[in-house]
Structures are given as structure tokens and as C-alpha cells.
Image 1 (cartoon, rainbow, N blue to C red):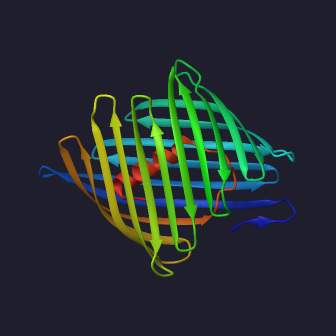
Image 2: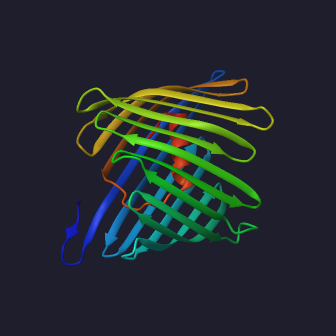
Image 3: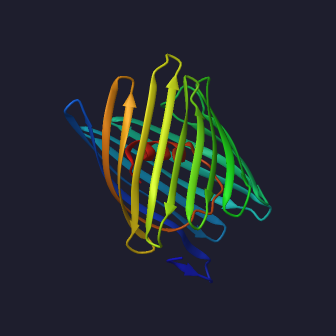
Length: 274
């Protein structure tokens, strides 16, 4: 941990910053996509404070999404918390305030949240469950209900010394798809990366994306990467070349799950970025 105090039990358990740039080329047209982001988790006694922020810029279109949360852990395995999320897309703002509860016992965690927003007609309700199948692997599920629409996400991940693997299935009610993301360490500093995403909607329109690349660890907490990939949407194919840098320390301790994680994986696989 970067910051620790036994007297006040303060600890920065997780910190991350990233930046990447990708060029999409199709039909002689080049589109530059830049993304920046970061996240943190900080413990003070029984309280956990966390936050995430991301910006994606494509030509003249900017999208910002951020969230901040506070969580209190009781000694019986129950945690209660509040979260504020805000999305800004070209001047169109939407905010969501949520209250959530998480219960952990052994290798199992279950949770639920309910939100309120002036920008939504109904209150979004989400439930999730996760199970640690081993010290290195877990499986989980999350269901989100919003405006009479259900969104389901199932995932599995495994993090070993030499490789990492992540897979998820997403059902968006009007579309569904799979995401695969993997890396293989070929040395103490170099890893090969690969990702694939495929989605299909009720109208039969398909999206397929893949990326192949590598990451090089400059230090234990700083890495750079590059990748080549392709995004195909119906009759449009775009080649994608991406470069990125990431700073990351520690691991998140909260068992709380979020669709933001799934969305981040989808965008990362599609553009080959962090």
C-alpha cells in the first residue's frame, strides 16, 4: 500500500490511471479516438471510498462518465453504501444517485442497489452475485432493470501467474453478445494480449471486433501497450491501431459489481486499449 497508518487504519488499496489513442481507418477515412481514465479505492477504518472517471473523445464528440461511492462494512459481513454517477455526452447530462447493500460470506458475495434520477422515468434496480471458485478465479452475474427493460451480464475471470482470462455474456434485451479478453506472460515484463467481442441485435445487425497486441511492464506499476484490430459493423470494416499507457497499484477490495466494468471491457476489446 502507498499510504498506511495503523493508528487510523488508512490505506490506499487501489489506484489506476490510463491513457490511450486509437486510429480507426475505413473507406479511406481515419478517425482518432482518445481515452483517459482512472480509479481509486481508499480505506479509512470500516469505510471504503472509491471513484472512477473516464473520458472518450472521437473527433469532436466527447463523452465523460464518472462515479464516486462511500461504503461502510459491518462486522457481520454486510456493507451499505451510497454512489453518485454522472454521464455527460456533448452537453447532455444525466445523474444517478444509488443506495446499495453487499453481503459477503466465505467465497460468496451477493448485493443489490436501487437508484433515483431526475433524468430517468423509473428507478433502476440491480442485483448481483459472485462466487470465488478458486483463489485466482471467480464467476458472477448481474441483472439490471430499468424502464421495463432487463439487462443481464454473466462473467468469469481467472488470474494466474502466467496468464489472465476474462469472458462475459451480455443480454441487452434488444441485443446480446459475448466478450473475451486474455493475456499471456511470455517473460517477467512482456505479455501478449488478445480480445474478441461479438454482438447481434433483434434486427439481425451484427458487430464483431478483435484485437491482438502486447504489453510491456516498464516497472511493476507502469506498463505500455500497442495493438492491431478490426471492428466490423454490417458492411463497414474499420482497422484499428492503438497505443496506451497505464499506471496501476494494488487491488480493489470491495465485492460490489458494476455494469461499468463490463462496458469498460467492451470498449477496451473493441479498440485494443486499456
